[in-house]
Amino acid sequence: MRAHRIIDGAAFGPDVLKIVRQAFDEAWTSIQPLFEQGEHDDAREALAQAVMTAARDDSVDVTPIRDAAIQAMHRKYPSRFNADTGEQKASPRK
Image 1 (tube, rainbow, N blue to C red):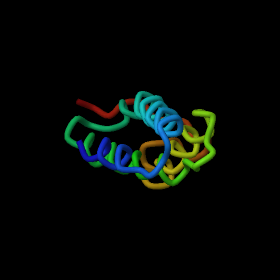
Image 2 (image 1 turned 90 degrees about the horizontal axis):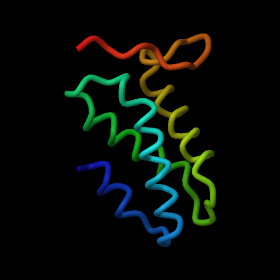
Image 3 (image 1 turned 90 degrees about the vertical axis):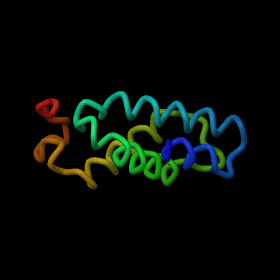
């Protein structure tokens, strides 16, 4: 998958990569229902890029990376989130 290649190709040490992977997984679990199956690859790639932007060489906590990535996805896909609250909208129709 493209998203995994983005993360696994990062120039972070193993401890930071573990945090980055966990942040990605948690963020994806949170926002995945907002995307139709055919959109998953593109959304996951965008999320991986957002996670990498939020991560730093000295990152030690998943939460700020995960939250920053979700906020980046909110900016990239505003129609997927409620404009007033930033909360996720209901899952798309299948």
